[in-house]
Image: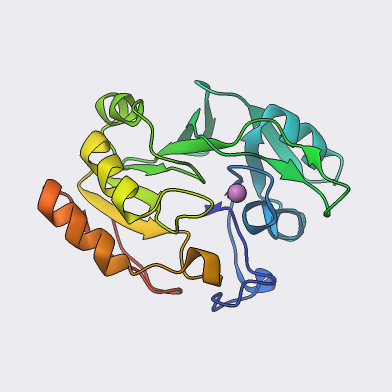
Length: 208
Ligand code: NI
């Protein structure tokens, strides 16, 4: 599975969109650094693209296998279930001046034996506690870049609400406005919860 596959134009990417393989692409919202190379990858691999209904209707017209669902819904692809949960952000597709709304931005709870919560782009919100209680994620992928999303302080609060075993910071250091020190996030989490923070460099792996 790929989530928000942004390779082209991403100075931190260590592979190109023609070098990745997957069965499923999840897209949390329409912004270029999230929808990214999803269409190109899905066309080449035949992967199913899972996203919110209105964006899915658009993606279907690009010739990919699009699976559109909505908040609270769960879809099952192969042995993986994906539940759509809220995120507080914006969502659009297109070029500057030609943008159109791509419905709501979302987060996703992915369960293929182990549960992973991908927050998408969002601020911190109280119902992360509900996501934590209902799905008990082993891993939470949380934006820490600030400016467009949560910063380290808000993301540390998100960890307190979600109580995952592991938190992985994301969505930082791609561009100057979202420059952050992930160690600052790790320090804040260590002070306020038992969750372990794993900082991954582009291309690095963690086995769940
Ligand atoms: Ni965004």
